[in-house]
Each structure stands twice: as C-alpha cells, then as structure tokens.
Image (cartoon, rainbow, N blue to C red):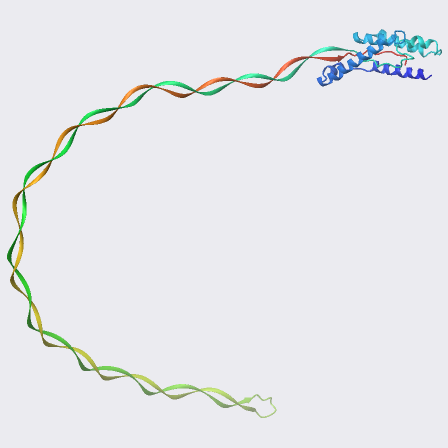
Length: 369
C-alpha cells in the first residue's frame, strides 16, 4: 500500500511538470547569466539518464525510454504510455494490472528516478561584449636634428700699423726773466693836528609848568528820605453810634538837603627839569695827509735765451693683433617634432554568438483527472 501512495505522488508531479506552460519569448530574452544554470541542469539530466541506463531494461524500461526521448524532444506517445500505465495501475486489481503499467517508469526495487526536464532547443544569440583592444595613437615627440649652419669664426692676425712716438729734442727759446729794482715813490701819511670844535652840550633847566589837580569841595544835594508818620484812620459806622477810628503808621517820603563832596580840577604850577643845549669849545685832533717818499721794489723783465726740450712726434711701426672673421660650417642641434605611434588600449564592443537554451512550449496533456 505504501508503494502505491509513492507511485501516485510521482505520477502527479510528472503531470504537473508536463502541464505547466512556458513563455518562449521570456525564455529567449533571459539574461546570459542564467545560461550556466540551464547547462548545469542539462548535465544533471544526462547523469540521471546514464544512471537509468545502467539499470535493467525490465525494471526501468519505461523511464529509460522517456529520458532517451528527452534528447530529441518529448513526444505525446511517451506521455501517453505513462498515462496508460497509470490508468491500468489504478484499477481494482492492484496486484495484477498495476505491474504492466508500472514497468514504464517505476521500479519496485530501485525507487524513484529524477524528474523529467522540459523540452527545448539550443539557439545562437548575438550579444555585445566589451573588450580591450590595442590601438596605436599618434603623438608628437621632440627630437634633436643636426643641421649645418654657416657661422663667422674669429681669427687672430698680427699686422704692422703706423704709430706716432713722442721724442724730446733740444732747442733754444727766448724767455723774459724777472729782475728787481728799488725806486722812490711818493706816498701819503696820515698825521694828527690839534683843532677847536664847537659842540652842543646838554644840561638840565628848571621850568614852571601848569598842572591840574583834583580837589574835594562841599556841596548840598536834595534827597528823598523815608519817614513813618502817625495818621488817624476812621472806621465805618453802623448807624447806631459815633464814628470810631484808630491811629496807624504810614511810610512817607520827605525832601531833605544833604551835604556831599564834589570833585573839581584846580590849576597849580610845579617845578620841572627840562633838557637844554648850550655851545662849548672842545679841542680835537684832526687827521691830515702829508706827502712823503718811500723806497719800493719793482720787477722788470729781461730777455734771455734758455735751452729747452721740445716734444716731437716720430712715426714708428708697431705690431697689432686684429680679429678677422672667417666663414665656417658648424653643426648645431635644433629641436624638431616627430610623429610616433604609441600603443594604447581602447574599450570596444564586439558581437559574440552565444549558445542559449530556449525551452519549447509544451502541449497540454489530457490526463485522467
């Protein structure tokens, strides 16, 4: 009975795999990262196939034929045989009729084999992969190029050139020689002689001059002086008695003569010393000039002949080193630019054909449930 339940569960799993729909477009557009998983599944199925082929043909005949048909595509006949076996195995006579259908996919001694894989085909898919490609880039490289250039090279050369040399030659020259001579010349001498001179001499003289002096003289002035007087003030009567009143003090101003001192100016005569001038005779010494004769040395010029040395120029020849320019060819290094090819790496997209597994749509199976 336990074996029957296991068989029913296996058949139900196979029918579910067979009846599941597969979208072909999504499978074709799947990423290439899923291809290794599919290839791994295919390899696993092949190993299961080999393991089934190693078993006896009587026990695993039905499933061996089913895996062999997987390589070329599952057919309706293989699933039909499986259905027929299941229908015959689920009859009332479980012991006799189940064995005929059970031999197609189930072994009582070996157990349950691997599940059946969906059908599909291998197709080529064009994908673009990024690769590094070596290219040659043109660059400018500085080099030094040898060029021949005409230059002027200095050359030293000795030549004879005329020159003038100063020499001393004797000569006679007439010159004026100074000679001193003593002579008498007139001169003026200052002498002091007595004389009388009238001069003005200052002296002090007493004179009377008028001055004004302020003096105090008595005088009378009228002033207002406050005085308290006693006056009678009547009170108003009320009609039934005599008039009444009282004495009160009242402040009044009275005119009085008051003596004051007034300042006046009075003329007086005072003595004052005044400076005056009078004539006096004084003896003085007057300077006068008197002519005298004094000796004086004078210088006279006398002509004489003296020997001198005169400078003359004499022409001579002297060596002289001069610089001449000679044309010469010289090699020089000048910078230049040269195009060179240098390797470089560039990322490029290259088309690659990859093998992808595309599952085929499965047909709907009409089972018994």
